[in-house]
Length: 195
Image (tube, rainbow, N blue to C red):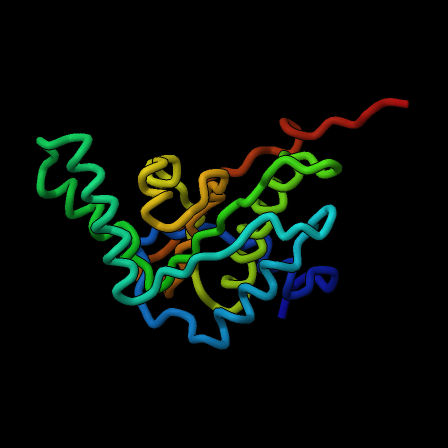
């Protein structure tokens, strides 16, 4: 029960939502019905022109380790002197959370819909996925990091040339406390347009 009657459960969730690093996550992850529900919610975002300019890639089970091996292999190519600790960090990059959902932006030139709007729609998908997962009792982290921007990694994961990662949403159960970070003061970020 909320202390303020004007704050319902949805508002309370949005007020307390915060990220938790994947290394602070544990299983069990969402089951197939929960995944389907989260992805259904995530796909209900503003989408000018009904293009669905995004798609999902799920990393579960051994697929998480396979994606990490790809990342470690690319690091080794770029830095043959990389330490075993750095390589191991890459190998476990996608295995820290029980589920990682890649949101792939498929933004492309369109006669009416600017690519920027399509990219914003993919960002909205990521945020809706984060909120849905949190509403189901999971913790999340929306990350990109270097491999999201590496063309070789994108190709190895199966992205088309024009596709980009909008983010990797790591989903699991909390294995550690999550501290809130300072948020911007509204006085610093809000202006009113004068008539």
